[in-house]
Image (tube, rainbow, N blue to C red; front, top):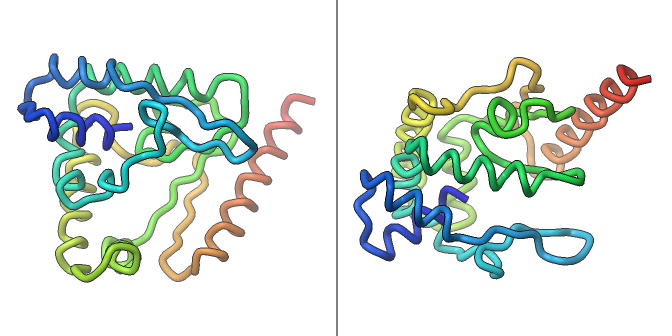
Length: 188
């Protein structure tokens, strides 16, 4: 969602320190679920633009996401999307701010170098540059005044540094199953 606001602001030529205009952009984007069993998040009724993962968006998303007014709009939208069902949400403050009462919270981590290697495998050469950008974004997001990025106290930490994608999914599912089982046992 923050990437969608960032790309819309960049395309409109909006100054990234203009909180009120960024808030308006965030409020104007429609987020919804696609139909079917494997719902995907739609942005203005379309699948997300691949450009959301571009270096240009990577370079500016932390600046956009630091605005309290933008965060207020998007947190409200995220909570609305989570109503009425089991959802998987990815974000640096989902477990601490957006859905603090979620029964299962994962903090998935790997070193900037490993994350850059994975991104390079997806998008092409430039792992060293990507690792530097990831480290910089991690630092910005961890130290921002509003909703700093950190694991929830009750989150399970999943370090995927040495796991392949299949192993990562298996480990995540096991942690979620255990959390759901604990939640169900506590309500009996």
